Image (cartoon, rainbow, N blue to C red; front, side, top):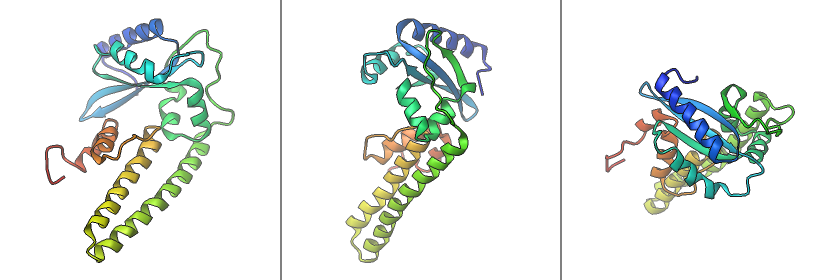
Length: 211
């Protein structure tokens, strides 16, 4: 779904002009999400393969360029890396970089983003394989949790349970966000995913010490 609010559309037009003039952009995609019926937007920004600066160097600069547009979040990636992940069957990029969501393409770009034979069927097959692998690891830690709990080894049981949650969040991040967050904090993983899946906010409540 695109933008229906005129003010948001005006902001988007300004954003495209800013990004296209300041950075070596190949493509920009727009994704719309809702938190309690309030829209917020995610821009997936693909830097040109000719860009010599790293994402780590440019992403903070792009964030500063977008500071006056709080409704618009962004993800910065390199175009050829996105193509590689599409070949690997990345579900997040398949959905967020769909041709229907393209809002800007550099007119001088000749880069073919979508691999030959790219389809939702191939993507889902890869996602199912990933889920099966990760689920096997998660179930092993779950069994470890019950094993140590039955023997009153609560510190070991707590570690196993933490791993169950952490690995599940990491699996969801890879499938939904395209990459996992480099942290062992359940809170950080949770906040990372809640940004685009607000329904997850009901699992843990911020401000409740027991959660």
